[in-house]
Length: 342
Image (cartoon, rainbow, N blue to C red; front, side, top):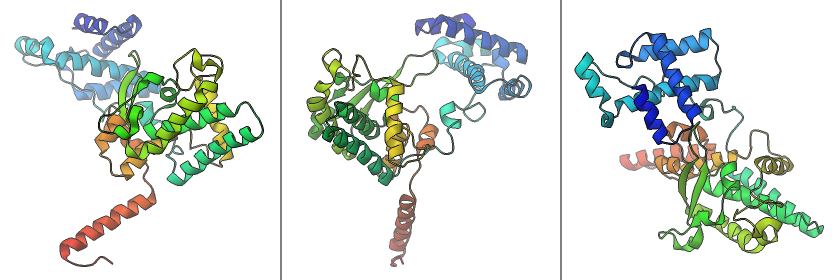
């Protein structure tokens, strides 16, 4: 079983160190349970997790590593194509089954470790933030500061991250060829879709890729992005030597640290708290699409979340939205009863 799983991972071009670590984790789990995989039960995972956390005091990432290895190994064993379930049933009268689920394993840090102060921007806060960024551009231009194009770049990156729900690394590594047409939204021309090639990757896996469809609410951002690419981007010194949408002054993409530092300047000048960081632009994208009536699964696919529970954590609808939902429910009830809602 372990040899077959190793070969499967090698076929996926995973690093040798990752494969060896996963194999070692499975061997440790087998020694702990003193059972073979076709006898493993959910309670074995519970007992193993308790030993890791309560006795050994392992870190959050180590828990994820051990539990994730068991989950992936059992996913391999229970795929009918490999025939392990049938072989075990024939030999031992039982077969392997998944024992590592979302409800009995440690959640990913993105799910469980988000600080309580982290939240999406309200629409009013977003307007204040974007206005502050635009004011920086105007002030730099009036002062004859050559750095005004850099402030324009930052303002456009912020708007792009919000309009397409992108992470910091995703937006800074966008290339010109990553934008394309959507036959169903011809008005956007070459900005109807965004191909994200540098999505957040799981440990030992390549970056996740996805295509984000431009929603009608992003039409203003399309105009901003088009102005940047056509008029302002050529003013950046390295724009002629690379294809990044937001090139740095030297060469290549703007660094993550430089983007965060520049963003923090704008956020603080806008008078917004520390809980509203660059990633809150992505949280706002999720929240505002939900408020605008988009299907939750569509939103999940747009932002590239594997689980709907992760998308729900990003969502922080406003009191006005909740009030509208309640009022609509009252109105519907009144209509059904043939009465006027008060």
